[in-house]
Length: 366
Ligand SMILES: Cc1cc2nc3c(=O)[nH]c(=O)nc-3n(C[C@H](O)[C@H](O)[C@H](O)COP(=O)(O)OP(=O)(O)OC[C@H]3O[C@@H](n4cnc5c(N)ncnc54)[C@H](O)[C@@H]3O)c2cc1C
Image 1 (cartoon, helix red, strand yellow):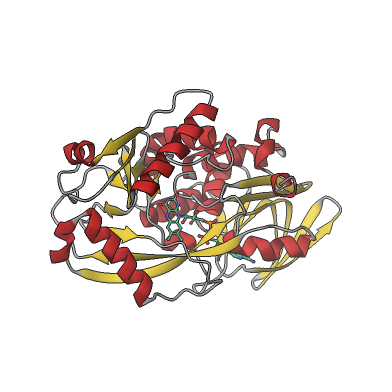
Image 2 (cartoon, rainbow, N blue to C red; image 1 turned 90 degrees about the horizontal axis):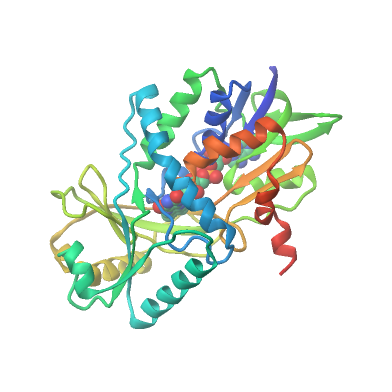
């Protein structure tokens, strides 16, 4: 098989398909290349928060980008609903981050104050003590120090989002090679020749959106792409009647009623296992935050690998003329802006100057 296209998006997880969906909306001829069923995918194991709080701590420009991203989410959810019939379950009525210790609470407070002071615009957050949290979430444990609340935050169903973006992309004429794992990239003149298990794909532009696979794609192009896996373990309970309406970073209720409890940050390479020690620590924290959970059964647990850059913020860069790197930790939160704006950069062949602080040079400067 030999296929020609204007743009080849490498990676069909949340990041790649968001960009591809945006390209299809712009009527850009696009092929998404993805690996088979055995692929490692953060998009199928994440927590589903649509989140601003804390973004920008390490890279100030990320705050404004995340704010714009969540503002664009309702329109995306609406559009996906009408185009595909899939309700992605978006709610944006605020989010809470709970602190385990007074030190953690003080650190959170300082961090968010720093983000606010560097942000040129409105950035509201409240530090709430136990009583303040209890007014919004009566189930909070008596020993919880407090937490931070932001009205910008929310949640969605990440699996339905992934499905809806794929369906919307296909409906607009986008093509997918689901056995299209890229094993070699040859840059010939103004074209990229991609070797895949399914055959050759020739593209004028490529988008490197392969999550952890971007490191290998970078090697094929002779550039270093600094992403590494950080494991997150998640516990899931039996279904419960509605308890929490707002999103809570440590224990969030899905629209099906289950409670997702998470998550760890573990530097263990590509190990996708779950461990008793970490599950126990996650469960202990959750019981501290919400003592009623002692009567609730855990029905499953899993782990997934985060895609983390050295400062945990996104990387956007044209690493070679026509080769766009798009990678981030928060592919749910950023889905709408990737479809709306990042796809536009690829269509136009340039990343705006205002995004320069997101390229890889920030790592060599430190
Ligand atoms: C535990 C956990 C909790 C999280 N919670 C949240 C959250 O609450 N909110 C949020 O916004 N984000 C969250 N995230 C992050 C979010 O899941 C990721 O940002 C997002 O899924 C990344 O999508 P991706 O497309 O970059 O990567 P992936 O989903 O990993 O997809 C990469 C794709 O690239 C393909 N690929 C790899 N190599 C190649 C190749 N050589 N050729 C072709 N295809 C290739 C793979 O097959 C795969 O489909 C969480 C992540 C984890 C692990």
